[in-house]
Length: 471
Ligand SMILES: [Zn+2]
Image (tube, rainbow, N blue to C red; front, top):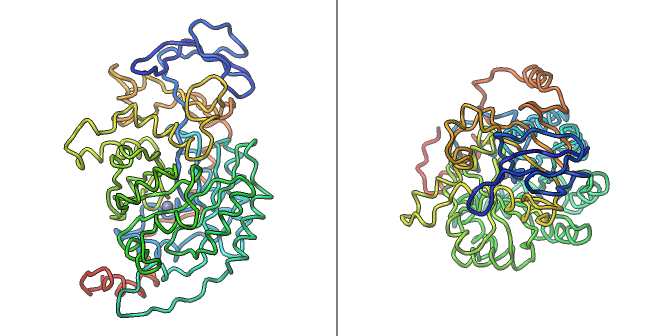
């Protein structure tokens, strides 16, 4: 559908301008004051139009466990997460719907779902998430989370003990075949669904798995995703496993590239940072998850100064425990003010918008098509209502949006020119139905115990130099 948004506020280099924006065949056709109306006229008065943001790292099915995992570091948190992961594809479908809706209603038009696969139902899991994203109409980068080592291999062994780990239940070759099949069935960038290669990280993946992913990425032109150096334990593990840093190793095997996005990136050396800049890899900053599971503060200001592309993610909803992208952008910007006395390095609201839009597009190899209000680019647009109570009184619209706490501020959202939010409501699915389904498929739950945490906690505490008292 073609349309023209009239008299809408857009950001210019250091200011704002009131313009009309024509959208024809899903792309931005013109941006200028007083344009001829093409298609439907949309009133943009007292509204701010921005390119859609990227929720560039999440795990949708974690939504089923938000709010319940106690304060634990990643390795123990993960053990608990997997002990209670949903095993039903209907739940995967519902949580993907929920993730899409929350992302849309907090400024995102794209979501990178590092999707946890149900063992034995891997393709069905992917199909369920893809179905949900297509129904909602959000742009989806579905990144099936794969590994070929069992969970305990992700914890450093320490100097004196050699732990043995159960072999992973699926072979490396079978895992790669699965991803190739997912690409054949679901990789449709023209229909707003892309498949990424997404080994979970060096902590649980062999070089053979990374190599296979590189080959698939080259063969099918797929973007690459992974977690990277989220915890101190992973930093230790890389030294044990490779005798060098994880970044040096990934660079050596060729995983880093201008279409590689790396979630977290907390424990990097200066050499590592230079490698990310040189390979044009993208860091996905997940500040809330990093705080929630105690991983640390990623040195985002250093990355920016070194020329590393950075964008934002919510991370899964059980390490956040929300999918509010604007919240992640706010915390991900101001968090770093405490790390650097020189306020000239601090992230401004406009820079945060640039990171959340252009930064995401660049990381996903779509900077020519997405990430800014530019004639010729796809119309992935978000229009904010500047008369929303949370954006008043009138000062600087982008300052209010990023530094404030916008509620009910999203008026309309379009993906490839298709409107999927109008008057602040998702129009493509029935959100009241979704609420009912989420309610019915869950119960209040306060007293569960993870067996795996009980098994591995003593070793974790020992190897991390903590006392041996077990909670
Ligand atoms: Zn993650």
